[in-house]
Image 1: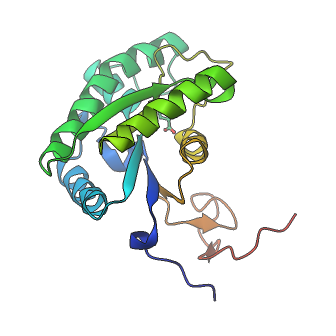
Image 2: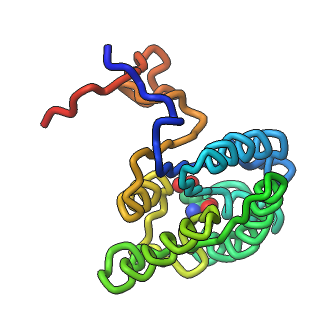
Length: 203
Ligand code: GLU
């Protein structure tokens, strides 16, 4: 079986963190202990000289609880308002836990246009490069408050993949409440086997 390299062998790491791990939906808060231990992990890689970029979800999940919006799907305007409220709390949460390790966080909010239109792509890339050059950790999310229904990532896995390419990262980690790649969605097919390593990607 192909050996999985450890994280400490990578020079530039993008870590995507999903809402389900980060946000306590009932309380409308960022889960403190979990966030602190992830910040400690990331600060360790930062301290060994690696460049670290966080792509953090959670703005809408946090904001909707803070605003006590009803359960279920939200209208676009409601998601945008929830993101506006939640993003503030999210950014503060990351800034707080990273600063406990002496690491500065910088917020980067991107829309689909910022990664797909050349001039804006170059501009976003320069900002991320500059933040890394001054040893800050960029904390990226989609700018959900201005993203429209037709043109948005909507999904931070895709945004993280784009950010990883944009930053020429040599490693992208997707942290979620699903253990890994399954042959079928595990909540629909509980016996679907986990594929620990994809050694080769066929056509
Ligand atoms: N950008 C969304 C948020 O911060 C998350 C999208 C996703 O869950 O992938 O709420």
